[in-house]
Length: 405
Image (tube, rainbow, N blue to C red; front, side, top):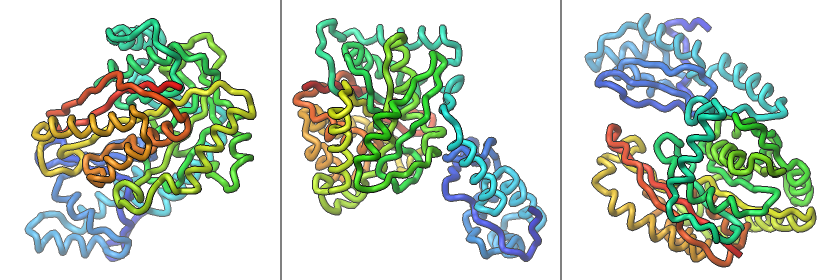
């Protein structure tokens, strides 16, 4: 769409992220993965894009730039805006039409493509098996006598930087006799839905990981309320994909199925300390109905939480280098993990609520859902690690845990 100098310009989409990759240049990318490309723009221009509100024009932006001593004209700004619109970075009619068609096409699929194959893990089956085997072999503390777990927590950090931390969780899962694995993932998109279930089979380089559609349909039928049937939150979400492909690796020939559930945030109870999640009737119904569905269908169920822990440093909005508080964060993480391993779901949330989740633990909802649904009697921390992304002054922490009846 061509915009005039005086016409209102659409705002930049709220799910676009910007970071300075070299001094004076900012990269823009789409957190929701509609836009196929990353755009690179001068920092001065990006700062003025933040003023777009759907009412301001290119003439207004150029006037503001002139007052600030920044040299770009109305025509320069229009050229940038039209590039952003062409690449689907603006909340414009063009983008809305494109998103609607993309969502319709994805919801019509019968299987979910492996979105991160060839990016976060090899697309070649032999290379992928060798990588996963190296993660499993690195778990020197694994025990052949380990009991079958009723649940595990595994990371969802990129395999390329935290792969070995998956090993202990999946060595524990090798002892499971489950036929259905309920996978709770972190939803990295802004979404108000509590549970977002996918009926799509998950494609992997190691073969299809089918979903247990009978389980999902029975679960939905027993709920007194409706859950979203929109599949699009799963399109690019890695927190479940990484678990699905690793499960296919450790059980290459077993007839197993998954129930993929992205969990919405518990921010009202954690960040805002508004009430007690244990008294939330909707949550209680969801967790209880999962358990009842397994019983009524005679399923042997094991739960998996795809969950990382803290996200700190400049990349995540802090005004300090993450390395300066890594020990502090380690102590905090072990408080969180101790409560989870007891296992004490309320105590787990209480530690996070006590600091209003200031370290940005992104696995709150899947870990809590796992504790509430699996109802384990005991748990153990299998490993803990920190990824110090020093080049961006940031860090992410993660752990593996196993739970038993």
